[in-house]
Image 1 (cartoon, rainbow, N blue to C red):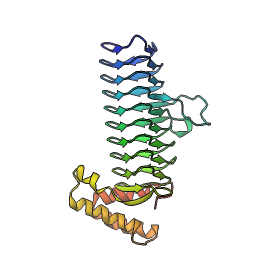
Image 2: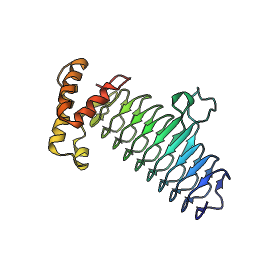
Image 3: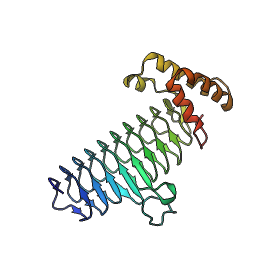
Image 4: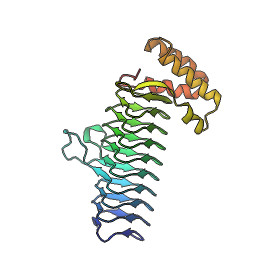
Length: 261
């Protein structure tokens, strides 16, 4: 605990490993088998249960519950873990659960994510880098989130679904199928595709040619009237000339759940 700043009212288990320049706020509880990397700040009234590893320079605001047991009736107390990367911002009342024994055993959060108030990441989820989860967005178990994904407020993702890189899920959308990279989803009775995330791609440096290729892929899958098998063949042909379309196509080919269409 060298150079750590720990409030006198905080309870830190002797088995926890606390890095340099870590700050732990009032009434926060740090359990055994918890590792907290250098420079991470944890606010008041938080709980961090192990086995959990948290990387460097994260900011965890008050009342977050990190590394709790999975909300899964099949969980029988087996050893599972939560791994959080570096430079994440985790806001008030966020819950991040550990994995399950039959689900891979690990919930994993990448780097540079913003996980905002009341968001929930369930057991065995894998979250990439540079994502934004707006208030009250929720992942059920075994969800996979690519890099640069944005979930708007109150969005909900069904268990075992995958959300591809650079996708945008609109406010209140309930997603019950895989969402390919770059696609925008907006709320209806359930979330439905509504084009591609052009504005987000521009902000991240995608040029007009790349965006045009992604739009053509989207139209092939969602607007051409082709059945899924024919659309896959057309996308495979288009993928020869575009790395982005190749990522779009490969995402679809790897899917085990129905595609959101």
